[in-house]
Image 1: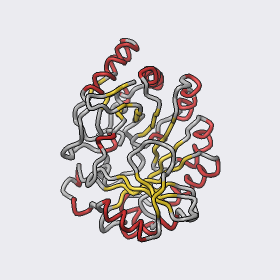
Image 2: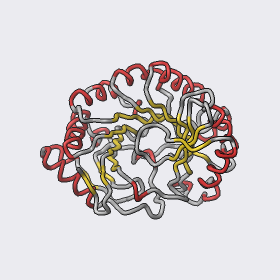
Image 3: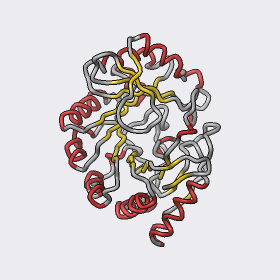
Length: 318
């Protein structure tokens, strides 16, 4: 069991397999794109396989694969399919995606043992989607969700970042959507940093979101299985739920159970911590060296996140 200096048990590792993405969402990446890692810097699938094995031995049982956009990396589903057979102690294998390539890969993801899927969807309106993502790919995302539902991925969560003056007027539309669809919609507070570090006016506070959810007839619900930071509600009889994640106005750091590994092998104890520990050289040195890096990263995990920094989400696997 891995426990940090604040008594938090760490059992969840988020692994970014690439910092490349096929969208340019305004709150994540500049329009021209961010400077990407060189191919030689990226951890190979063989390296990642070993890292997962060491993590399992240390007591980490929940894994989420992210990007950038993870499905732009070739052979990802083949890699994922190797993990649960090799490491039976894995309790959860999840993927976060923008959904553009999901229809193409949904069946292979289900076959690979992916049991939880997070899909980003910020708007049902083509013009708003295009404004936020800098590309109108709404139809592709909806097709991907339909494919994931059809093949039977057990838990499908939909992440919607609410921004004042952009899409906050669609909250009730998302609630109504869960009356028909078995998705777990989570409204995520916009985190002003990077190019948008001064846009605090775009934050829709979670207290307002909760008030509107309850006004729409939702009652508290336990939500899907898992131990993430979201709180959930459900309209009576609805197959889906709605939830909130509040990293800005109501932080949940005291219950944080995760660490993050970016695509070039740098471990972070916190999404917004600029401190990191590299395990790339440790992978070459052996499993004991990798385990030592994990322990160091957890030892240095901060108590909470402080000011919001200037890096781009695509490079840290947020």
